[in-house]
Image 1 (cartoon, one colour):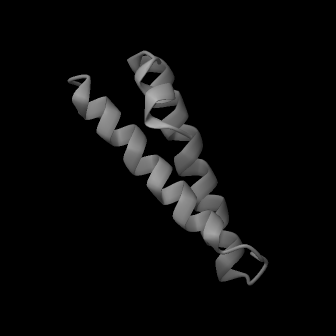
Image 2 (cartoon, rainbow, N blue to C red):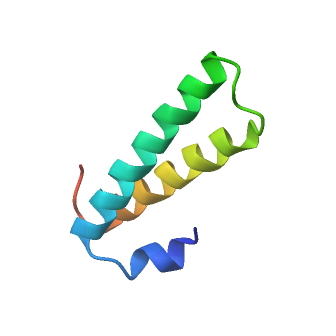
Image 3 (cartoon, rainbow, N blue to C red):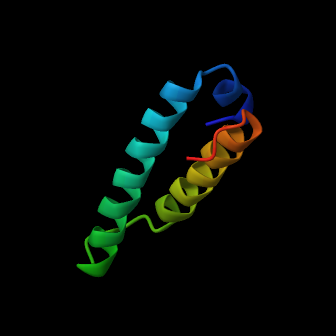
Length: 64
């Protein structure tokens, strides 16, 4: 996901996006722990997306 797409969303949508990403990250971590995760690059992508959403929320003036 691109930062420009995130900047067009309001804070409620960003918080929902963040919640979804955190759930996805948890699922991927559990898959990695049980050795079911085949594409480990997904973890890095989701982590960066979480950071991107948190950065945009901070820019908009809302700290979680």
